[in-house]
Length: 182
Figure 1 (cartoon, rainbow, N blue to C red):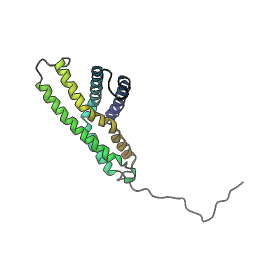
Figure 2 (cartoon, helix red, strand yellow):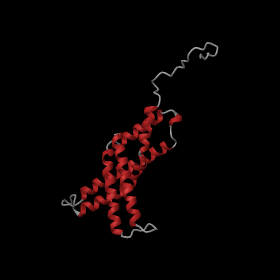
Figure 3 (spheres, helix red, strand yellow):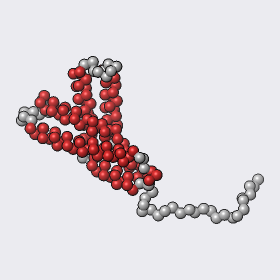
Figure 4 (spheres, helix red, strand yellow):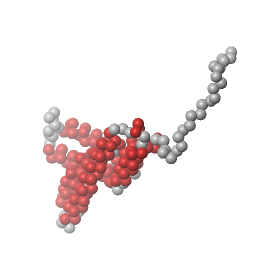
């Protein structure tokens, strides 16, 4: 699941970088698009690509969050980043919104006319609206998802509570400074 998350983080960064480059070229200095229709279509592609990239994470997202939360509570205090608790909260809220939007999409999809299939205007327009609604939550995952990986890395490097404490074994002192031989 961490590999899927890593892939999503990389892919979503590429998608966002591409969007930012496009947006910089397609808007004036005040941020207004030169062509509203083209800009909207390009935003729709960004939304769809980000949603597609998240699909491999979706099924394991709750488990990833629960595991990170458990790991976080067992980490030594000096290894915990203050932002991690807040970031996990952002990810939980974003996942809750994504779950609700997914349920809403399923209801919308089921209420479409029988001939509305992928590739038809009716279906594609409804799906584009769904992707647009989900994009900010997906962006939260793209922005803060690395916290899950950071917590996991900290947990892997933290001493195990089951391991015996290290003992100090120093060489016995002879009570005199060693001589340097020439």
